[in-house]
Image (tube, rainbow, N blue to C red; front, side):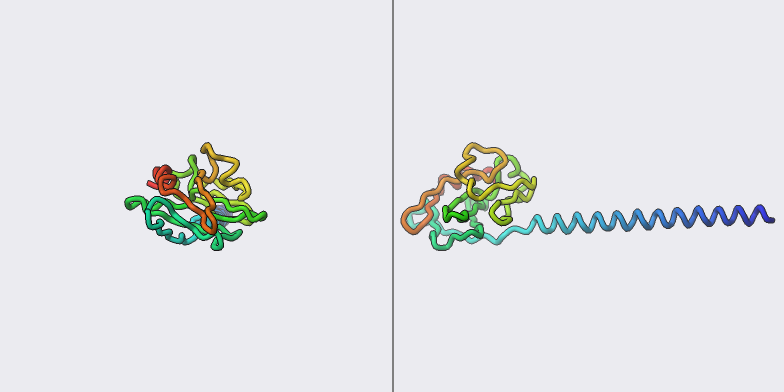
Length: 172
């Protein structure tokens, strides 16, 4: 009988150990899933774009220079039902930069960029790019906000619709 009591005690101890280990693993998994979900949710939040209406001749989009600040503004352009997204932002020196809200590498993920201080942060891969270099340092592709040609004409930023259409494939 004494032996049976020892056996029951060991058996209960093993069961208790398995339960404790299971609870610890469950809590760890729950914490990981919660953390991952929060990070994922935070990264998928993208700014609401402003719709730009092309000028009367329908060959270009025009954005008032006065509306651009050091906080990136996101815009969209409708290309036969495909929304092409891009942004414009001033750097700390007051220079205006514009780029597509996609890069030539991560575009298939359809996540784009968000601003983090003086850098644009790729929501897909996590790389960060200085606002000062956008539209100037990388004009040939790669993991970088895709180049968008623009001109400042008086009080407006002018972007040719043909330049927007050229990168339509990034958003299909």
